[in-house]
Length: 331
Ligand SMILES: NC(=O)C1=CN([C@@H]2O[C@H](COP(=O)(O)OP(=O)(O)OC[C@H]3O[C@@H](n4cnc5c(N)ncnc54)[C@H](O)[C@@H]3O)[C@@H](O)[C@H]2O)C=CC1
Ligand SMILES: NCC(=O)COP(=O)(O)O
Image (cartoon, rainbow, N blue to C red; front, side, top):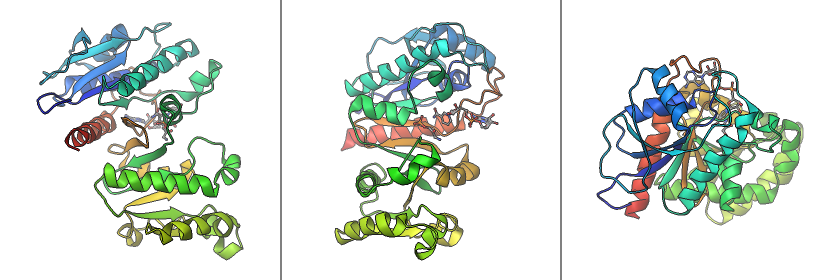
């Protein structure tokens, strides 16, 4: 990418029976100043455009960088469906199609063909129903890039990162080890500085138990595992708050005291973000050698094919990826 060309972003359409393809069509129809390369089945994108009431000029991607993109023009890397989609009803026979899109996008980013990838939502259960172990894009891209990563959800007023991602709740306590916490906090600190321009970030770390263990009366993970890691990293100069009780860490009086939160598990913090900024929150994978942003929502099967899905989260994810790509170009 040079100063005269647009950020070149792979956009994966996600689950073909979900709202992803419609949202990609809406994005392509917008005046977003990015070189968007949809990774999807071409006929599926045409049907999604028609369901959303937008007209697209769909062309094959020739790999060349471009300086401008008229609204409606979208380049495509064709990844064929196994079977035609039925909106609202994922078919596990299309699981390989979904994973092929992710692999193509990741490999293209690693090869420098794309400046980043923006992902539409996938139906994880449908991939699992096909007999393929899969827990999320975050883990898929980490493995593909051989990187240690952290999931962040960034909204207009709150950034939340996760120590563990897609685990059953019963597996969380034993997964929260000193090594995991230390690695995660280092990745979060580095990313807040390099991606979000906060050179000395303040990170609030949540406890695992109610009331952060209430001094050991409601669980010991804080005393045994979390506090020693925080003390060690504070001694290195990291600004860490906590461990804080999760139920009060997000109250208005606390918000000014940190730049990001580290939660111990998925549902400890994501409901806070999704309930206050569902439309504008973006999922960002920290620690990858390439930019990856995503919608915060799922496949919305109840809306698929109706053209009523809100594209705001995909727009926000794309704009963040564009900003990060430009920033990388300048650094
Ligand atoms: N980035 C990803 O790939 C993600 C995938 N998922 C997957 O999505 C599937 C469904 O998950 P759910 O928990 O049902 O969450 P969901 O986000 O698909 O749906 C929850 C509710 O929000 C509504 N909604 C979601 N996106 C919307 C949009 N753009 N505009 C208007 N309304 C919208 C839906 O209609 C539904 O009422 C699961 O397989 C889950 O694993 C969930 C989150 C992220
Ligand atoms: N709730 C966020 C989520 O599950 C998305 O995960 P991923 O597919 O981006 O790893």
